Image (tube, rainbow, N blue to C red; front, side, top):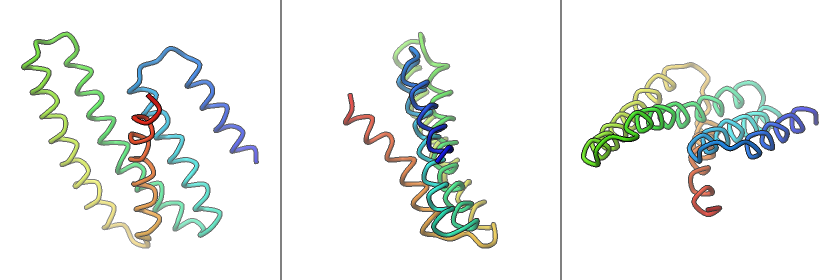
Length: 132
């Protein structure tokens, strides 16, 4: 029960500060990855937890890359900002594919928890759009 309490405290600290929407989304992604991983660890053990965490990482790392890439484009002319978006999205797709290729080489990866972790981390964007 204390881990849930710690995660909820982390969530309240994230929402109380004046931070950007992108930072909030990335923070919520980490929070969801931790919650889903803890839940699947309780249901299926270490293999489920590792698979779920890796699925979350496969969603989080490319999103972090994209966010950092776009952050560099702040204040640039519109054409350069758009080019940065296209390059960032292309890099994000390539990074996602590369991470999944690496993940599938790890023994004892369970597909369902992997996909649950991945989709859960991606769903943060959908809920962020609904909350605006």
